[in-house]
Length: 339
Ligand code: IPM
Ligand code: MN
View (spheres, rainbow, N blue to C red):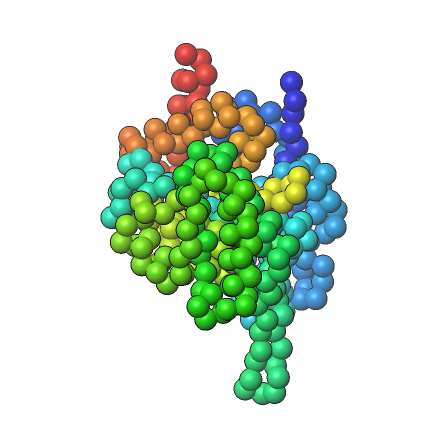
């Protein structure tokens, strides 16, 4: 049967520990993946140097699948974010973050089930800023028809393939009339091709309020880059935070699954990290491979462990180490496979 090779970037801080957890869990579930590991880190290169070796980028393209642990993004001058470099270099045009309530993890909200689809290549993240003269900076928010249509189409296809009812285009076209106006125009055009999926438009500020007051009124949301960055964190907050939220960067024939949370340097190397977000991200990738049964087995195992609540990492109020949590999940998988 078919095997897949996945390029793995373990990342900084807790990255290596949580990556190891995912590898061990996948091995237990007999998921047919061979890992090709590349260590990239902002720490290992000097400013101005090529951050990600061409070899590693080519590997993701060739394999079609990558998994990335957290990478440090330094604030200010010097390095560009490795995360952004990867997205650009691989043309990963849609960033998908499903936020679904996790069994046993209590928050103020129940049954949250929303997905942000974020334009991932341009917008406010185009990197076009300059000092006009000291004290005045200009920045360009680039919106193109091509990228807007492409991400809108991704959102509707996602809705269709995942039995979702509605796509909401999130914008501020009342102020950014041309930029967000073009984005909306593209969403409308694509919406017409999907008569069975409800389409609505919502201002970003209204959307934020609605998400906090009643998230069940939203379903799939599609939006320009920066809005997606912010709202996807808001949505993650609804279900218990970034430690539980998966993320997939989708491109043409290529995807990069990633953990959205930080590198947690304070607990790095202490066997305390929670691998759930990286694991759920990796499961998005397994579903892209159409290994649905495998993905379901692992997801059920994680959810069972979390629901029972006996083995939990510290961030979720437990005392378990990353290894203990990983073994508890593996135990569930083995029970399932042998029954
Ligand atoms: C994310 C992160 C990145 C972003 C950072 C690390 C550049 O916050 O994936 O959401 O802003 O896109
Ligand atoms: Mn973010």
